[in-house]
Amino acid sequence: MPEISPSSRGRELGERLRILRNKAGLTSEVVAKQISVSESKISRLENGLRSPRVMDVENLLFLYGVDDETERARILDLAKDLTANGWRSQLKASWLSKEEQFLVGYENDATGFRCFADLIVPPLLQTGAYARALLTDSVTVPLDKIEQEVAGVLARQAILSRAQPPTLSVVLTELVLRTVVKSPADMAAQLYHLVNSTVDAPVELRVLPTVAGAHAGIDGRFTIMDFAGVGSVVHMSYGTSHGFTCDAGPLAMYERMHARLVEKSLDPDASIDFISKLASGFNRGR
Image 1: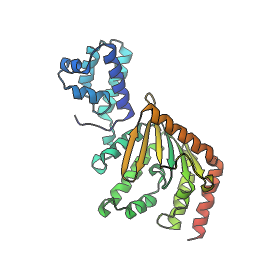
Image 2: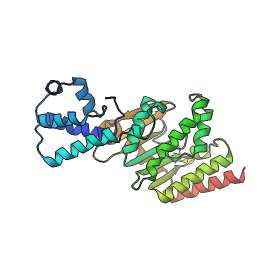
Image 3: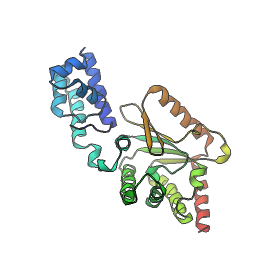
Image 4: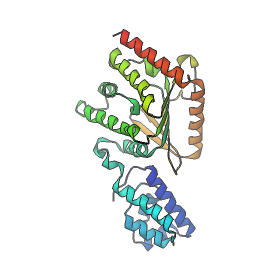
């Protein structure tokens, strides 16, 4: 089976299997020999990097002596869910780089996002026109692939329309809001879209004004993705490069950075007013 992007369900399954293996006092090498698979397969499964076969998971539960029916059912449900409903059923993997595949997997399972945007509107809140303009001016996307990429951006936003959508807390610099992408009219539409996004979804926007001076996010944008049942992941992006970390030290640092940025920003009501006034100004300047 192919490797997959490390979703929270995959990480949760892997973590549970690792704990059970350690409780049983078995090494991954011994386990691999017992169920006739490679040791690397056990490692990838425990790290959430391999789509599991339900039969393999059943064999592992038998080997680890798991006889509690509730625990068995929970673990097997995770395995079945990953096999049947992975992110590949929602977006075409051929559209995405390996790092983007990771990002989509995380986004699909996140229960909350804490974002800092220093230069552009986060993809989860972009209009099609805004995304298209960014991609058109980019030298990294071939012209014949732009509409495909725009479709991918908009498809990712479907998570905000769920019956129980994830929370989205975004700090945007004033520069993001004042940078005209494509035209004043299109920028006004993007800003109104930001305002409207807070009406029917758990989206909170905060504006970091230029007068705030130096700030904790001065080195670039980032997103902290929170999950149910497993630790948070930080996503950092610089142009076409993506980085991820779930290590405790860096995670705590980014959480402090986000908290500092929130402290320096306008409150949600004042931010919505700020964005609305800018949008009106762009409309008048058409």
